[in-house]
Amino acid sequence: MTAFRGLPPIISAPGAANTLPDKLSGEILLVTDAGVVEAGLLAKLSHSNWPTLVQDIGEPTHEMIDELADYLRQHTPDWVVGLGGGSVLDVVKLASCVASGGHPCSDLTGEAPLPAPLCQRALLPTTAGSGSEATRTAVFKDSKGRKTWVQGEHLGCEMVVLDGEFTVGLPHQLSALSGLNTVANALEAFLSPRCCEFASSFCLQALNLAGLHLPLMLANLEDRKARQGMLIASFFAGVGLDLCGGGIAHAAAHAASTITGCNHSVGVVWATPVSIYWSLPNAPERYARAARALAFDSYSSIMQAWRGVEQHCGELPQPSGLTEVELKAALQLPENASMLRNNPHPVGPGEFDEMVELLLVHTD
Image 1 (tube, rainbow, N blue to C red):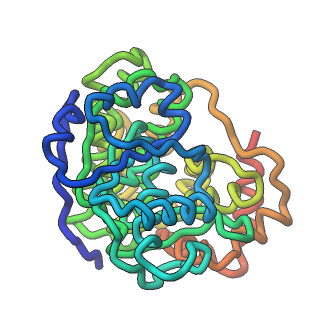
Image 2: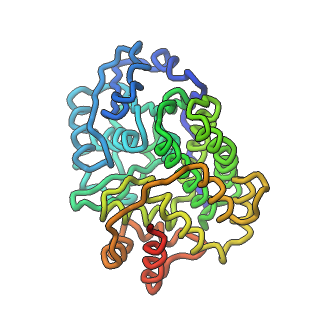
């Protein structure tokens, strides 16, 4: 069973960000990271004249979130505009809640109740991959260096802006990684035991849009229509993930990031073929349905469909330095348990050796 909360107002069109200053009122703070500034994307919002906080955000950590929360307490804006990839958006979402509570981010785990946000949030993604703008989840590294997550109603934002102009200029490899992350999100949500027909509509539409637009975008990185299509696909996949949850690929990505510090999308894309292989015998018809959505009836095999999209992506990075002992231990951390259960074939207590072997064999 899935619980739908409704969606925030969504502005979706090339150039949509130009309308944002007219839609927000009161004191507004723009939060972004150094990579967005270096890419010249901040200049596209220069007409807003908003105060801007540029953080050095890589993979989110509890320190980053607490730092922004302290800033929000001091300045109490009415709106925070998050401009960036999933890491920036997660930091903005969670910091706005931490700011109104009395506990640091490191005290928050899993589905523990979150305080209402101190300010409203408008999220403008600059990558089409994580779907963070659509989810009520934030991912970060805790005080022990473990990749963990927090989920709660108050992590849903108040406005989403999908403007493909802000993903133009993203290099080929990052565009490919983000796009495959969208596909992986939609696949795992669709295969979740929690996925009903209502949630399926978001997942299948995400696969359909990604199957169409990702190859076109990677063939021409300036293709505005394909860029916009991938942003919408990422949002739909995020809705599906929010309703149904992630599975093996997301648990493995959390484990790999805990060990090596690798980017979340790198881990998810690396582990998705293993996730498919593991659960395929338990849900062949559902995987065939996903394959048809992704590949427009070209394949009945989901692995063929995945490889068919992946072939447009070129060489992609993978987690490095993983060992059998460390990976097995990281997979069994409590924060990964719900994701390892959320598959057509859950990973049982006696199956971790087999899962680790498959993941390591898949590592080049």
